[in-house]
Length: 320
Image: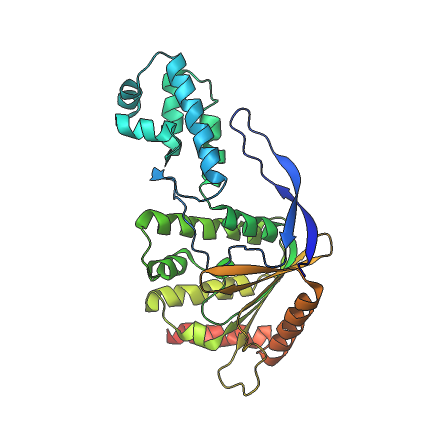
């Protein structure tokens, strides 16, 4: 039987002209898919890139392209003329107008000026920037933004909310099959954008447990690891964050079932998600959530205390 719970959250509605925001209910199903730290989506980094987002983002980019074409035609310019005026080739202009390529912010700024759009095209930059990220990433970011508490246990890499940019890049660069450079840039940008919740006015409470083995694995190299350990110390000293280390010498360990991710939302509800190869599953069934919360609680009790963990990470940083 499929268990369904409705969670009301703020969602961004990207319209081309004018820009507006809307609040709609998001329906989360047990067994649904959300992108976690293992997401394999495609996104851009602010540079021109071909569209391959696989969801509603493609329609948003196509709508932006249509607006550019309409403004160009109203100005009586051919694509080659617009391209020459803003420093782009004719083929690039056609791709942007057809919704097959995501325009750079400077493309929109220059096109707005040349076509006399009065700021209407330039105003699309924020919408285009948000639409660069696959819907799966936006879904996860949206849930995290509305969480009052985020709890996680990770056993193979540092949690995405705690990663440095270079650590995140190293993770994506080692994926097989290999990602294109534009894909890597976009995924890194999306992961860094998620971390904005850590510095918002009312950030969520954080409770992360990480394996000692993860802290010793020099993904990306020794320098990358050292700076990642410094980042953990920085976040671990925040008043709303607790980072704990699960030592290798523990004979009893409740986390053998794999990573755990729990988000307690503002409405009092809880959402979990579990990750595996190629997919992530949303967990909203109360019985399954009870199991995840029980396991995470035991894992925290078995791990080093937050104070002991910071001292442990500090020691490891000195050894890295």
